[in-house]
Length: 120
Length: 166
Image 1 (cartoon, rainbow over the protein chains, first blue to last red):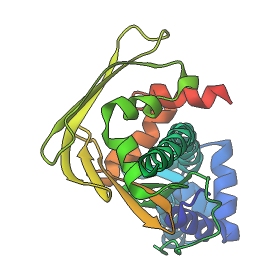
Image 2: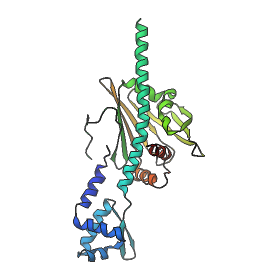
Image 3: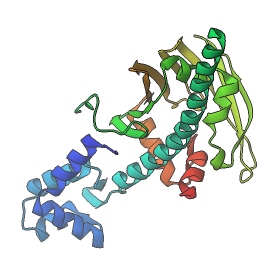
Image 4: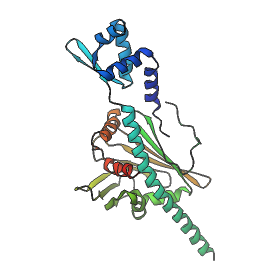
């Protein structure tokens, strides 16, 4: 029941491209500059910048510019964090609402019993 | 954002949690009772105490002050044997409309959410929708990040206990 629609859309769009998947694999081994990545994937700097930008927007990659070099690394897996957090939330509310369910049932029968007593 | 369809195939007694947008979280559940009963369980402190802190979590409610009316305030203090300090949750009721709606603030931090709970009755059942609106995207993201980094977020200790139980 977990929907993180916007983020999932961004993630899947980012992963739909073979070069971007390659970039993620590469960054899984080590951080790299955009220039490194462009060379490794035989691309122009501008082309690689665009790919990195898409990955960055999906939260899959973070970049940091030091001097003239922009270094890319894998982003923290926000989707996993988010899913875990939402699951914790769900468990809390599930437990609460299960208890509320029981209480509400009890109140409902009590109200019915009271109404019947009044009618007699 | 695609809106959730009304009457989507959710079993009545399922609790659903959904991140609606970058700063909104929605929890829904349907109860097999009319709205005035669900509202009563939510708005009378002596009843509220019976379900807000799930027994299985091992938590105890040290105190529960609720002045349920528009403009009223609340303060809940919990204790758990695993933690030295009791935890306090407090805020203000922005709106209390009997059998329909309660809106409250969470003022433990300046990044606290505004929570709106609505009660919609249909054919003797009540759909409860709890909507948490964080002031900024960053506040909800922080809550997310917080859960991964030692859990400083307000409900985190409670959440963790529940998560570890299963």
